[in-house]
Image 1 (cartoon, rainbow, N blue to C red):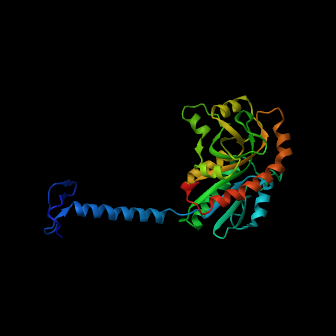
Image 2: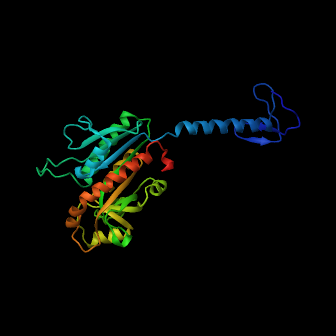
Image 3: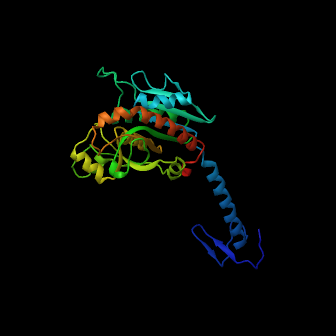
Length: 308
């Protein structure tokens, strides 16, 4: 097609676009700056339409909880039902599923009870936490591969008084790492710490009044020794638990965004035994978690990841 000669023409070759010349393409027609304007406008509209189509709302949420006592109030509050076929029969893990606010699929996964050693206690620690998370995400990505998925690691934790933590505080994690994987062999040292960042949740923190942001460090022991404490302090720990780093690792393998919601049951750097303080405050912490989690779920569901 031809354009008025008052416009400055463009030359299009296989490698460049130059202002000030004219070119012939499969015949003879001029392509000038007017066409360039409309061409840019067209691709701008196309890009924005494509972005809108790929920016989808969160409709599937996995909530990973280690202990049944931590999960029970939340499961009952949402009326979730156990899904007997979610895990294989060999796995001790449990999954409770349901719909929240009509369009958000919620799956709460717990680590189940110990049947290997015959104690019947909750399967706590990084191994069951990591494995249950990996299997859950694998199944859910298979169920709906095109839908956005996010994981929330919910539970109790120890808090550091020096970092401003108090009993009952709700923390939203910014990062997870391990404080008891000491491997002083070059790059294995960094691997041992194993830092994994949580997805940004500044808007969520502001929405959940009174909550705090903080780094969560993980170890497979309820107590700690001096070397653990040094690693925790060197890495800016706010709270301490027994699953977060393993859960974060599995999320990283699947490329699934995640964050933790942790309620403080005991003060790590306080003067009371952790086990005594933990048992004393577990019930209250579970109630606090039950109050916080529905608000978190309500805020997350339906939003784009970038809005959190």
